[in-house]
Length: 315
Image (cartoon, rainbow, N blue to C red; front, side, top):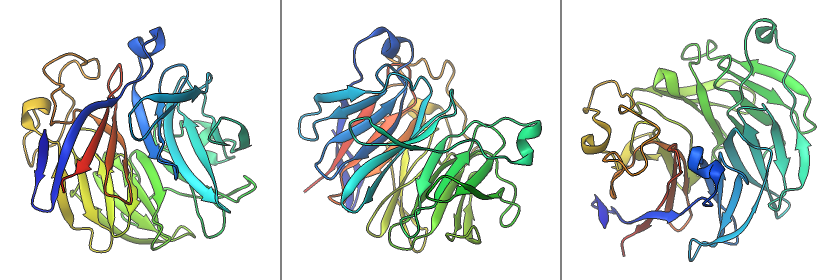
């Protein structure tokens, strides 16, 4: 199946990879994040046991799995330091934020910061991102108190931003990532339907409202950034202009969401596997995505049982 228009046309490979067929995957199994390593392996973080699933990039077959403690598997960021790749993983249930090797050895952890918000508020981290310029680790508390915390490379808490220093108070700063070309921190402020961009010190540089109705996070490749949106569809944006270049896989047929209207979950969401809300050529609930240097796109969806789709650029 082919989707897209103009220079943004792709071959759609539905269920390119599948989570293991076990009880944890059947009762939950939501696929939350996806990354591609230098070797071409596709790494998926899913709410099943094991949670870290590594697939052969050519065949979509499982190569290895690990991670029996991530029942709330959520955010995953692939980083490279001195030629060695590692993962920053975030568990929304245990609130664990940890750095691991690609085969599961824990290298570092980030503790809940001692911030006044947590005297009464909750801490429910959703994503972590490392600044390649200085090693600082930023953690988004997207499901708790809607804050983004900065730590140094040793894990020591440094500061917090809450959005009021710029476009306005965050409302679920869900996903965060550093742009490799500019070094800026991008924040998917999902509840505000906003993308906000900061420098490495926490100064807001720019923002854009209403371009995305439910941005979950970012994946950069060259001058483009992929933005998965929870209420169906993914967008490709120009990093410099923030212009939308293409929207892929969105459709009223699946979501019931009308263009220009506030987006909402379909009835019965997320337990939609095998229903009319799951159709080839249409996304249902993109939660994580990866745009590779070759232009391939991988999308992980927040659906019970999981769904990982591959889009290959048409020749």
